Image (cartoon, rainbow, N blue to C red; front, side, top):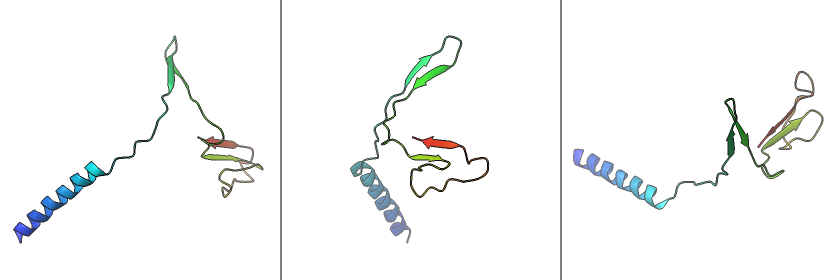
Length: 86
């Protein structure tokens, strides 16, 4: 019984190692950010955004929303608000 258990653990470890070796991890391309240091502390960062391809979410009262199924509140504090996410 214990021999079967240990053989199972050993085979599982081998299968996990083979999976890690053969299946590559996700390696998404990341754009480097351009950071400059300010004179009195802090920093300034510059981003490059390609519109409309990089837009994930956009919403505004009475206007278009991305995705189209997004329900933007028509009344209340968010009626005149806008939001965009990249």
